[in-house]
Amino acid sequence: MIRLNLTTLAHAKPGHRQTVKIKVGAAEIGELQVACLQGELSFARMADDIFVEGTLSTEVKTTCTRCLAEFLASLEIKLADEITLPGAELTPEYPVRVENGWVDLTPLLLQYIWLELPSNPICSPNCKGLCPHCGHNLNGGECGCEEESSEEVAIDPRWQAIRQL
Image 1 (cartoon, rainbow, N blue to C red):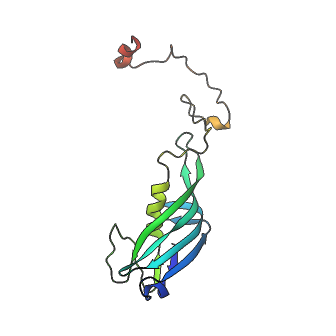
Image 2 (tube, rainbow, N blue to C red):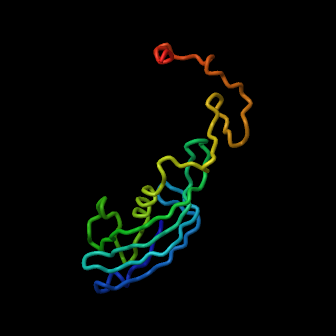
Image 3 (cartoon, rainbow, N blue to C red):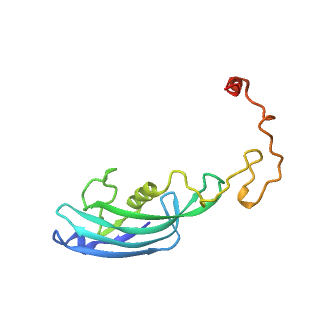
């Protein structure tokens, strides 16, 4: 849970600004595990809400799509969104609201992290992946299994017509 005190801003006149530096160690944001979260957010009081913008950097624990090893993916999040004031209804478009002077940024950060997380994360550009025959992680060395030659591979009879092309 990432909570910030915005009491003065919630009661301020439109145009008032507040800047907050964020530095959080290992934490869980929703279902994601982050190793660190740091950056600076600027909050501006608008007529009906609070506008937040800034850049945060983080490392998120994820799984490589080539070798299935867990690793920390570095992300830079450019945040620009609105926080509603007390009494406003929470909606998917506005998932965060100031309550008793405090705001929990977790739902907002979770959305932005998911948007920045690559759909096919890879632990390194030269990841070798898994052996297609035995499933050994090839980043740790060769597997030693005997690869079947392309002539000896059993082909589904429904695909035999393609060999003739």
